[in-house]
Length: 444
Image (cartoon, rainbow, N blue to C red):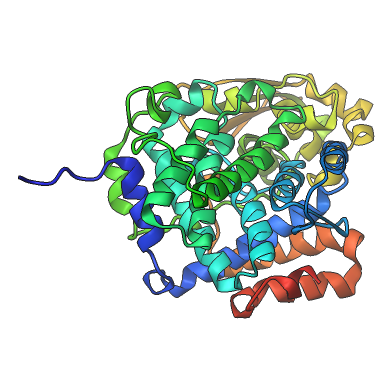
């Protein structure tokens, strides 16, 4: 009798456990190191955000073994607490990377758990980078498998896919067996949640840290023999039945063939990625037409319903809300030209000039758009109508350009915290991570 083909959960487990360093092309490791450089920078920059300090106080109350480092705080907590805190810190500023098929922000869910586990268990840099690439691929495959119906139902893909990506990466790092990995994916899946309704509050960064922590916990439990169904993802009342998904089976054929890392899109504005195309299109019009803010009568932004469901804030009363407010992001970019983390401080957001200019910006859906692309129409005080289009995820730069852009971002975010000597030392450590026998040189 012919044997039944493996289900989705087991097929992923076989990919995770059966993939070796030799199966990955060398260039993907260079991309992964740039991704880690970017992740570390945004984690350092977000380390003192109020939501992060609250999580650290709760970690202090809970106690536990000192297994892993809280980035930038000189403290060690349990590996699970470190994954939670570092994950939330790296997403606190919403300045971290995005991957379209992942349906969100992958690195903030994978690197925190991997770094905590690697530091605790003394794993090598090459092991960490390999595990990251495998976890990233699993998350991307599951996101593409689920399709937009999952995201549009109100689930935050960073959280839901992040639970599973973190579990996949940590399972690979700990070298779980195939059966243990099946269980780990199931344990992660049954914990997965995260509502888009909370965007613009402390809960969104919490999603990233919680996903990273939950994936690590799932792997530690599976290693102890904790079980879950064989088909938690695909079975009746399983992950995709309950949390919705289009079940695009063809994407599974890319396992072991493509790696997604080269499509990772880093941010160069410190706001929700769905605000970036409107920012770029508006700046392009102003630049090409040589327009000052005073010469602009009105701005109309048209983008996808997907974008509007995420960047849904219409007012910018706090720094967090401003990150999800297209009118604020466009107005601030045109008036100040500065879109880094300083543009989302409470004082900056309250600028009367920016708040007044926001009233000129209207935002609406474009039924022909499905992703991050945006059309911006600018009406001048002289009655001229200028139009521009941008889709920042279709404009991902090559590796060398990306490396230089992230280098500049890394120094911009790390210098105020670490100073020049330590900033350079950390950068050099990350870019040579694949030669480390363990993580101690990086954390030292």
